[in-house]
Image (cartoon, rainbow, N blue to C red):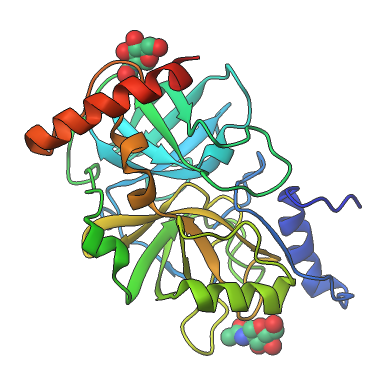
Length: 307
Ligand SMILES: *[C@@H]1O[C@H](CO)[C@@H](O)[C@H](O)[C@H]1NC(C)=O
Ligand SMILES: *[C@@H]1O[C@H](CO)[C@@H](O)[C@H](O)[C@H]1NC(C)=O
């Protein structure tokens, strides 16, 4: 069995083999939480969501298969993780208003991804987890805002720095005890931990904390539980006080390892990128000073982004 750092489909094999054989303990390692084109999905240690509970949550699909989560931040824009770009020049689709993965429901809206713009510093197709794991998706047509499909705000600096209980959601792989065939969106309220604590925990569990840095934030489990994001949750939201304060990026594999933190990219550290015109329309929702700033960033980013 090949055991490379980003071969996430192994997660499924590892987790599902736990029950049948007595597992020879594998060392925990760090990896992305992208779904590697497998439909087995769901948040470790979470709860099933209700319809319309997470109207900003989207499913990013490639060839009709869920690969990652994403977050609707405007009628034409979704943010996700850069490592969710699994093929260049491929057709990606965003599915909105969905509760059960692949269900057919009147709430559902589908939009093609017109531009999948990854952060210019992110090493595309990297075998290893990396910083700047963030991307914006420009949708082919605006979505229709309904009770099932709503945008969520980008955070203020204060919300970015807040500690407390935060909500993660996703269709990522859940656990071997759960019903394998139920693929309802799941969520968990997880405590944010400090950078220092996160570093310590990663070192303790996986003997490395690289590439953790201050553009990321971490959550741990509620005491006594083993909760984390898992394969297929990548790109999805961590929400606090009505704003998206994190984008699921990476963590410890196997997911649900005791004391393993989940690591998120901080939208606050990439605000310029998220608001930058990924080649055409400026997002003008923060008044004049933002307009000028966006414009400057537009000039700085446009070459990188459009190439
Ligand atoms: C995608 O990028 C192109 C430029 O590369 C731009 O003309 C187009 O408007 C963008 N599409 C959307 C939906 O923003
Ligand atoms: C958490 O994981 C540990 C092993 O890593 C296990 O012993 C414990 O039972 C798990 N706890 C829960 C609540 O699943």
